[in-house]
Length: 137
Image (cartoon, rainbow, N blue to C red):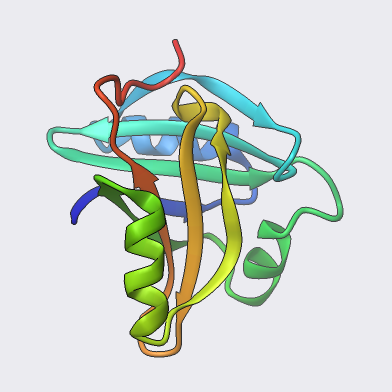
């Protein structure tokens, strides 16, 4: 599995974008509102490192719990996989818990993603690799 990006929870996505630009990051695609997950998303890149800034878009956003407990923080790694269903089954056998079923990722051209949790390493995201792994423009 290859790391695709690191998910970074932020309270104020516009301020975070400005601050990451000061560190040499450039935006990838557009600021996306994902109504299903109740978050705003902006991908950014610095050389070969890609981060996904995620902020709540409403009071009942699941990302709000992380921000309340910890504050702005990296909180998941996303791994690109060839076959998401097969990878999920393999990880379940290794004691990973599927916490969000396979669904389209609006900010990554509706590619298939799923989230799993492991007590030893925390939350991970799987992204099924396609010929076009581009971000929305």
